[in-house]
Image (tube, rainbow, N blue to C red):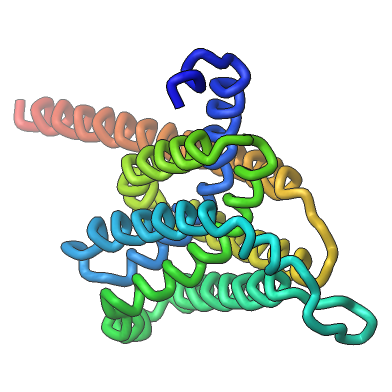
Amino acid sequence: MIELFSDPAVWASFLTLTILEIVLGVDNVIFISIAAARLPEAQRRRARVLGLAGALVLRIGLLFSIAWIVSLSEPFTTILGHPLSWRDVILLVGGAFLIYKAATEIFAEVEGDSTHGAETSAKATFFGVIAQIIVLDLVFSLDSVITAVGIADHIEVMVAAITIAILLMMVAATPIANFVEHHPSTKMLALAFLVMVGMSLGAEGLGFHIERGFIYAAMVFAGGVEALNLWRQKRRVRVRIAADKVLASEGERAGVMHRH
């Protein structure tokens, strides 16, 4: 155990795996933030922390059940000439659920009906949201664990990298949730991202591998465009405020001259 600390290869795999776990966890954090947003404000932070804690427990548990993970990839039946494994089933169900959840949220955003929003919030229960988070955590954890096994050779390194990544996501979850909640266009972009992830999970379950890097690259580009739009909106607000102050000042000056 102690010799691992003096091995540069172990440190390299640890840093690489930690970064990849954080990147792979972005979609998980976004889903948790949006799912928790349906709860009363006092319960949201606790739901996010419990959701990410559940992800940590699931991933570490799956790491210690690696033989079972490998068995999930073995086909158990064939449908229309396509061999189907339990991993495929999990990815298909998880992808379909993610698309359904994102589409429901998009409908609520586009509908813009306050009554509908209130009803949706009322239906969201704390344990219901936690159950949704755990279901998606299981799907995302499969990717996470498979990535960990492919990069690191030591179970201690995998557990440490996943733990640090989850702790960092716990810290980042609240700022991300607040930002998404206060910027409707960004929230729509995040929901579109979840639809894309759901489609990639479904395609993976059907045997069509889609590099997650392509999805992240598209979302980074879209996020950059959204950042420019938000910057432009802030500049317009500042210009409008400055113009209003000038008009108010000129009006006061005109009023003073009129009285004299």
